[in-house]
Length: 225
Image 1 (cartoon, rainbow, N blue to C red):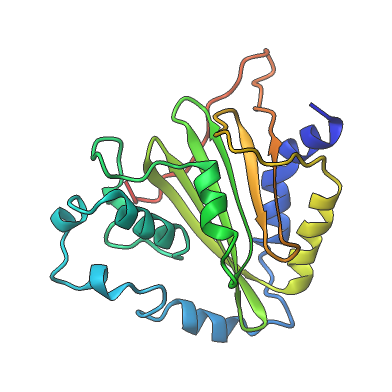
Image 2 (cartoon, one colour):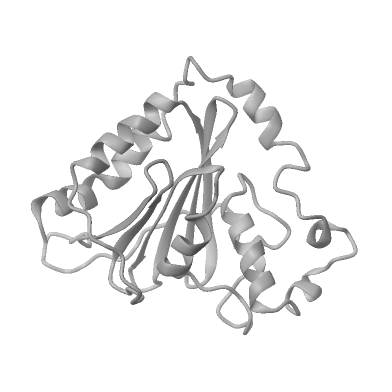
């Protein structure tokens, strides 16, 4: 593993928190306007599934393709949906994270500037997804943890182009690898860069506890499961 890739894997969480989840609002982005859009009840709404008559029991009757649609809607949502807690390892049609499918879903999305998925990591096979969506002059970043086929964490941030450019500058310094058609189950990060029409991946180093042992993935439970 190259020094650049090791550096990227060690500093990734801090980098994202610094550039994508900054506490101060971007001065050239109307965050109040964006918040009014993303908190509207119709944002990301799928009428067929969000109707009150469509129940969790109906959810478990969906085929894999429809279940997949709802899963990707969930990772782009700033808050939980009525189906967030319904994904698990037991229902046959429930979606399971896949790097290659993630790339396939986002590489043709015109509204998505950048999307990336990290994982699997730890004994629970934790995946971390980040989706950067353009909304007017701003960018909505949604972050999700998905462990053992269950949602564990959700967060979002509103950023401007300069903040996103800062992340792009860091990505340019790393050693990228070409994506193949073989699914990877080692700890890796897969990226869809629609700004530059590229897709690539890194192999990431797992954290050590100082004694040479790999630590378990740490997630925060926000009451979703």
